Image (cartoon, rainbow, N blue to C red; front, side):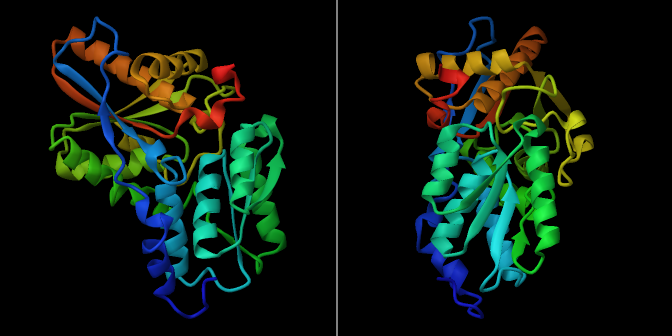
Length: 317
């Protein structure tokens, strides 16, 4: 159990536990799944975030937000960490909480995959299920109301507005991609949920080379089936997300995201979720445009998680 007043204890425990394996995920070049009409001068790589101990890219911001709150003295004995989630951040927060001995409560839409609900409960976190028609916005409003009623009980990490979210990627994901491509990356493509991945990684890559294009991926419509992604215009806009920073946004249909996720498993042996399929579809759209212009490119994207969380969903039905 975390001991009140021993400020170095959380850091020591995180570095001597499963949390030490957050980050440094593999980068794989995609080959067989890519359409034949793409130029051979265009390379597409994917960062496999399912290799994180909690199984997704959200391990990075979850750990960062926890450690930031501990450093600020917000998490004290008797306090409960709470947040709203579409699933992966919830799993990550539950995992970090279990590793550090800090209780966690989470709100999520009732229609998230059964696998996600069960994994969170396996880590010992308490789950509140909210109206599925309201999506993550409903979960956010639920948590805000709960925290307002019991402010002394809860520490609201607020992943959608917490700068420790995007900073996790600024200090890890972006550096890893730059090193893994040996500075050759020309385009970075990432789905938008909280906006943390695209903002933090993009900002780091722009520090290395201002000419690197940073491209966000969103669902094409407000009502969609791409878990983990937000249609920003119809949602509560995350405070950490700044669309003006992006060089471009690509909108993806749910059916295309599903199709390309399935193709990845069958043709590339890369088993991922639908948000990864959406990211790949966006990369291919971009690659086709670059092919038409006769340009060379090294496109890097993030595959946020593995497909094992979606076995009971329509994705693999």
